[in-house]
Length: 263
Image (cartoon, rainbow, N blue to C red; front, side, top):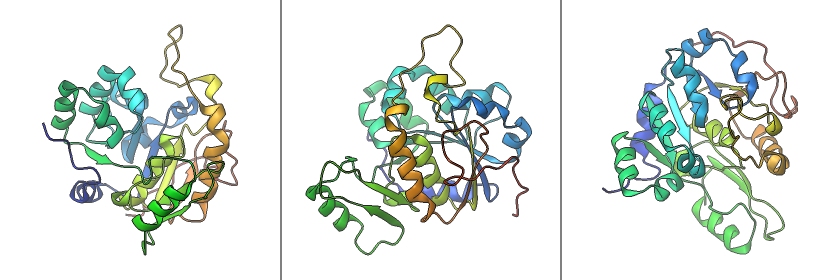
């Protein structure tokens, strides 16, 4: 079966039209996600990532959007992915995920009618090649901003307000979710579970079962640099509901509760 078209504009337009308000909760895997009231998750649109969607599904809530960009998560948790995707209202995946799918799984993915998004640049490292690639790709485009160092010793940082043109990963699906939320037209985004406490594990990992490996400690500086870059470029208001986080509130301000929607 032919693969979905990466960066399909009509698919993202459809998602933008389907949103129910101006507030979105980006529901992540940190343990403090469980502190977000179910009533709020029911009232507002949610972008759930990886295994976090199961918490809503088990409580009778259909996630508005299920986002998975990590193809390794898909490979290790294929059955769980399809269970959560089928119980969600909309599905967004990365092109990398679709590229690693077996023919059988590709058929299943296509049946979900997912929106497929692609990275702005496959490499996270600077180089003359990547500098020229990004320069040509985003010439005269004010919706995508980036830094493209000429040396591989430095990392590319960027932020896209229009994921139709690509997104920057910054080593966490939370960053991709934020760019997706802005693309869809939300005015305010709340991170639920933006803890970045890799040693504690993901809240949905069962006691006694093996925990998935995480590179969070290794990638934390890169993630924080990405959030710093985002801070001056996003036009949304972005808050962190986590009261136990390694992300400074100077980057993502703390919010104790979710405000009422203005739409």
